[in-house]
Image (cartoon, rainbow, N blue to C red; front, side, top):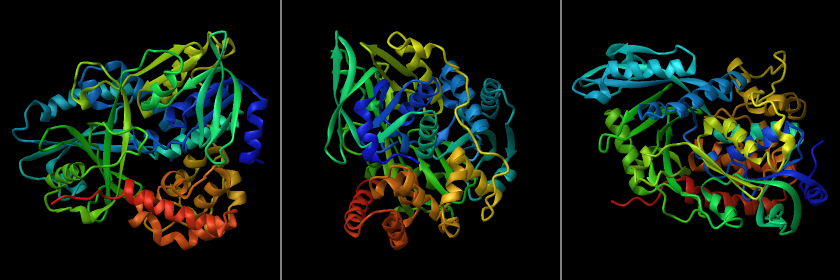
Length: 528
């Protein structure tokens, strides 16, 4: 039986931790998972919720980065493709292959040339060790993607990458870390590094839920805070990491208004920047923008009116009959990517996506990188930590990330596809889930791929402190349903109350969530 938050908190100062990871996004989760498997005593803390920042607001793609190979970044592309294939093999249902199409037109120039693109795809598949590409003539492509821009269309190249639920990926990696002994707590902030003989010896932390503080002992501290990396690192050194925060924003529309079962890569008609329109969780997503984010990083990123216009313009150009307007937008999201800048003043979309690691007196800082390569990033962090923690040198750097239940797991109410998704989401916890959750809650919420039981499990086992943790991250109901899913509040409230919430707590949390959704996940005020 898992310990309560209060019991976990009492345990923290009584333990001499080998590694404390600060940051509960995919990078921190990956470090905790890889460190825990070595037998090290690992603690991960996150000042907000797990995956609260970049890792719940990505484009949901596990990909090699076709544009990176076009830019000549062969090493990053290769590493990403190797990791993509690993994740597809280890976590089916959580990470799934998807077809991507790129349409070719008469007079499109070298960027639109079918044969040049074919060579690019040949290299892409070669690096991935697969062969999964083809070409569709105009008739067959339009049958697959109805109402796409048909004037002067020659056909479309098809290749594959993968799609995921980024937050569930983080949560599943954290599940694996805890399975190997790691302790994780959200809403806990690192307030001060503790030093002994000019080397880190621990952290001072504050629990945002109770206001309590504690001093913890640690041999190594990992600073996996992404775009916020300088905040903790400046406690150790006067050097600063040149991070260029970049905002990527997205629109969610119904699949009825923009039917799509695949992903489309395209160039925006105005600035020719690459972007995507793709199917995700039964909806269609339009994204992403790629802009320097100049706002305060402590404030949640939010889409701007200009970005809404920009994204709708691209969708309506590619689908001339769609006539999408702001009334079609179900939800939005915006995230900030931590790009380790080249310092060359490049266009945001042309900056490299490599990660970087710095070691300062036992504090290992990491920033940059891609969702896809989190395992490799984690290994680089642990390698940098070896001088302060020699025991982690003896580790299997190619071991599987995930463990899965047996193929005989019986999930009678679910279809084969739903079973695949369920196991992908919960992994080795799937059997416990089925033992505990009421059978009548193993039903899918209309217009989503989420079960009512997912909500109960989140309240009971996934450290959900607030309603937005459940609606925006443990599930994605806030991104998939009109008004953030408020129409389902009566049922969700009943579950929350049965899992220990009070009426007063629900009232506060419901008001809080509605405010958050309207401010950060809905449309901004649109100017005429």
